[in-house]
Amino acid sequence: MMSPNFNDRKLPISILVLHYTGMDSAEAAYDRLCDPAAEVSAHYLVREDGRVDNLVEEDKRAWHAGVGSWNGITDVNSASIGIEIVNGGHNVPLEDGSLPPYPDAQILSVIKLSKEIIARHDIQPRNIVGHSDIAPERKEDPGEHFPWAGLAAAGVGLWPGELLEDERVLFELGDRDRGISILQRGLADLGYGISVSGQLDDQTQAVIRALQRRYRPLRIDGVIDMQILEVIKRLSELSRTTVSAA
Image (cartoon, rainbow, N blue to C red; front, side, top):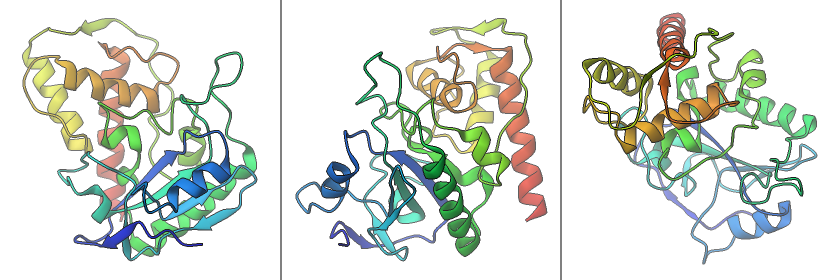
């Protein structure tokens, strides 16, 4: 069954957005994504065993991203393909409180599907994002347990590599400094929706958490330290390199 929750695109496709379903089963997620009353959908649903359901045709605007932005695009639904990955995430943790793992078969299927979408629409590596990247103040998926490094190694997205051991804190919430303005410009250049205020405010801290959740998942505290500066620097270099090579 295809989802009825779509309309016409207003922008060309340039972004791939990965989500987790945040529900207790694949069938519950499938039913919700196909329920007209829910007014939510995605182009694809990837189940734990690797099976893929195509719910909305790629030339249509699926309703998966909600309020958010990337590279200055605020109608992310019009510019993106959305993949929902069956995983309970933060909403349905395991009994011990940990986040449920993504099975290997599922991740291999996500990689294969993503590479096909990237090839069809010439999506740049810097535009392969998680829901938390485009909506850092309200979303956490696909979560710090998602294997972004493995996807990047397979050619899906960017990865900064081994990080510095230097974790000296540079700025904390409320600090105001020219260095924060420079960092905010760097985050905006990567694609994040952020205002250049020169202050480590709530919005900037949310973006830092999103960056940490994806690229330094072992500590998500919203604090700007030397590792975070290194991540931004390396991602900026990788973004320029991959665009130049395209």
